[in-house]
Structure formats: C-alpha cells, structure tokens
Length: 330
Ligand SMILES: [Fe+2]
Ligand SMILES: [Fe+2]
Image 1: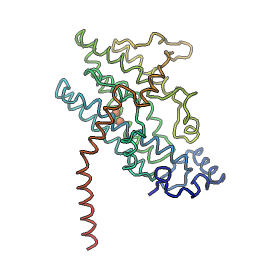
Image 2 (image 1 turned 120 degrees about the horizontal axis):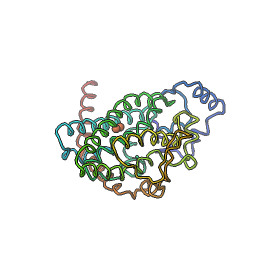
Image 3 (image 1 turned 90 degrees about the vertical axis):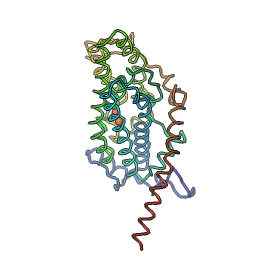
Image 4 (image 1 turned 180 degrees about the horizontal axis):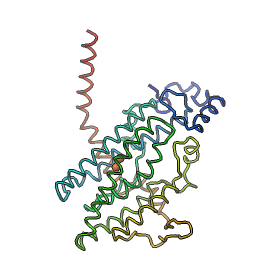
C-alpha cells in the first residue's frame, strides 16, 4: 500500500519526486498532450498523484457530507412522491461518494486514510454544504443550483486525464442532471403556487445564489493549483470560465421561474453575450473553508458520530472476512 506523504516512516529516504528524471516527466507530459488516459498502474509524477488524491478525496467527502443538508428534509417532504424522489437523490450521492473513494484507492491511498482525513478536519469538502436548509424551497435550490454548479464542474472531468476518475464521472454526471431537474421542478411548483410559496422560493434563491457561485473556487488569479491542473488536463476549464458558464445558463432559468437573482450588478452584456455579475464576498468563502461557516461543526460532528456508530458493521465484516480466509486456508 502506498502511504508516502500520508504516513511517511523513513525520513532519510529520498522523496519520490527526487527520483523523477526530466525524461520521465517529459514522456508523461507527452502522453497527456496526446490525450492518452493515465491508468492506475502507469508511471506518474508524485505531484500528479498527490493532486488527484487531494481532489478525488475532497470530491468524495463532498458527496458524503452533502447528504446531510438534504437528509434534514426527508421526513418533512410535502408528498410521498417528493419524499421518494429525494430519497433516491440522496442515495445517488452516497453512491457517488463510494465510486470516488474507489477511484481514489487506485492511486494507492486507502479509503480508511481518506475518511480519517475528513474526520480529523484535515481534508476539505465543498464549502456549500456548511449552509443550513431552512425551508422545503432550499431542497429545490440545492438541486437546481448546487447540483447545477456540480454538473458544470464535473462534465469536463469526464475527460480528465486520469482514467479511473474520468470513468467514474460519466455515471455521476448522468445522475447529477436528474438531481438538477428535480430541484428545478420543486421550485417550479412553488413558484406557480401561493404568494407565500413563491416568497419561500425567492428566499431560498437569495440565500443559495452566492454560495453556489463560490463552489467554483477562487478567482483564477488566486487559484494556486489551477495552472498545473490545467497542464495535466485534470482540469479543462478555469474556475472563472466555469462560473461564467453557470451564470449564463442559470439566470434565464431564474427568469423563467419569475425569481429575482440577488445581485444588483447583474446585467446582460450584448457585446460578449455573457452576463456580468457582482463581486463575490471572498471573506465569507474563506471563513467557511476555515471551518467557521454556519454548519461546519454540526456536519463534521454528525459524520464522526455516524462513523463511530458504524464501527460494529466494520468489525463484523472484518470478522467474517477472517472466518472466510481461515476456512479457505483449512
Ligand atoms: Fe453527486
Ligand atoms: Fe447530486
């Protein structure tokens, strides 16, 4: 099992990077430039491996933590049909987390190590899931905006240079588009309902709009990993390009719903064909990333408890595995 960087034992041994030759690095980049997929057993630079482990594990953690704000509404969904749809959607997210942990494991890090990173607070997950779901309309806003932003981010990942990640994303993206539509449909019904229901939808948009724009990460000028990830074709578009695409697609949908995007600076620029939008409150983003968002402690606390509560299942599975192995050896 590969553990360097996570659990390095021999401090005097040269780091893997130091053993990499310029020829190896050049040959690797040539494969990337030729649009070849890099597979688990292929040689890869240590920094490429580490970047992917960080990104894939953060992605997996986001899927798992992201179940919490929606799970909060499962027992309060307004109809049986909405409940069944929401339940299916949340189960999809669990599945996404599991494919992604598996994709991460192909890079030589164990699922236990990745989960330990999340539970210790060392590994990050998407800042959006640290906001509370106060009303049923928030479930609509999450599907429409949060899954919508996730799709923008994830469609290009289907062409990511690392094969196992790219392939996991294909199915995930299909499911995300169902998630986006179910969210939009919740808001469509609320917006066609009573004045109170429409106000609830507007309030949800007011609270989720800006955090959704933050999901694309810092502006390009401040994004420290972006340039290298683009060169390695892990990333295909910059944060600002993806954010712009999201705004261009989503503003007309808000208009269709009869909702007002909470941005006084939002204007359609005829010349470029894009919407111009106001400045994001980056201070808020930084605070949420640092662990000071409205629900950070609650989310991690709940995940830790769920992990502890599941210990008996892991223990039973281990005991069963040992029993089977003993039987096979006998
Ligand atoms: Fe997902
Ligand atoms: Fe989703």
